[in-house]
Image (cartoon, rainbow, N blue to C red; front, side, top):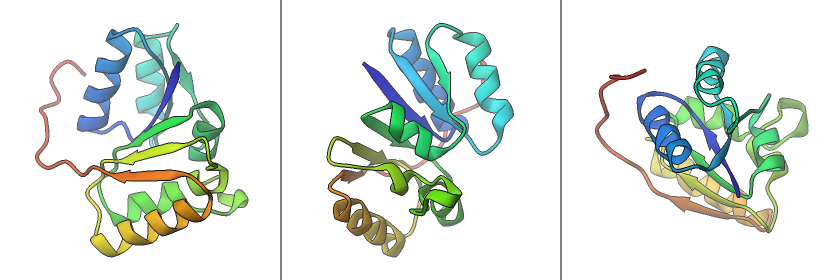
Length: 135
């Protein structure tokens, strides 16, 4: 099974490594492309680089997003095909777990828009951070 991950900051990077070390394949997208390339170099047989959040949804049924703030979630979630946002490709087969640090208003809006597409969005925010050891 292939999973999707959007956001390779300190928390996302650590989560990605755990999935990969457990033997899973991972489709990854990050707005800073260099981070995805570094991960693919470390795990060339298990990392698939996506060109957009939309591509993550095309390649993975289960998607985790781990972004820093409201602006970042809006940048990756856009629902029109032109900007290649995640919402533009979600369907009934998708489960999106959002672990970003975002406002309740935007979170509720994203849940409504995800549900309109027949997909499921789980709000799973995290707090704190991890060190960047081993990166």
